[in-house]
Length: 298
Image 1 (cartoon, rainbow, N blue to C red):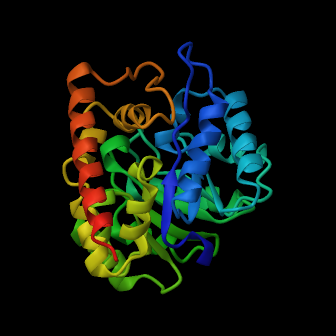
Image 2 (cartoon, helix red, strand yellow; image 1 turned 120 degrees about the horizontal axis):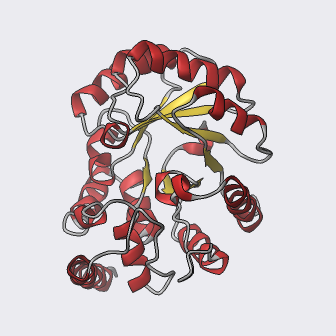
């Protein structure tokens, strides 16, 4: 658990123009975030477009990330779904050697009750050989993992934390107020991280960390003043990352930075011309701001 505090990056999966996996750009992305001070890597979460990768591609990406990382940073692997047994089956057939935890999204589409969500996670945690991190993102799953259910699940010995992306500060406060000190409350929203840290959250799992690992590392672990100021620097660019769905925005940004292409897989499409222009403008303004700050450092 100590390894998974601070800043995690939900890695993108870069593609070539023909939509095959671009492993060279994936390697470049891993080195970019590693050198930027990120504390751990999250492979094949939502940002990694796991929903449109085949089983074989997921294994290839996972194996490549493990080899490229070469033990430098802790690894979290995304395994989730809306069929409990399929999630368990995927865990059982995956070589999780060297992986610190599984990030598992709350079941989507089915819209289960809280009892169903509870039993789903208990079954997954019982079956997993490594710890589970819950992932609550109602904007995608159409159901909320309540504070009460989270706290009940936190008592399971193999469930170590939650990535909270509900945007509900009161819900996060309830978790923070009543959780065991060892249970990790992790921000799933870059802009809410400073606020969540103030109530006891342990860093974040970030999308923008793919592009700006130094800023995200500061938000996750800097003093509250520097964390706040770093968050303010992302106010203009962060909403653009989600305007046409994640990871469309961050891939457009990464393309502008020369790290990978902006290609995504259907049903997602690359950023529109208008969005790309606004991302470029916001990135230029952010770069100018960072250069000005750097110039003032003795």
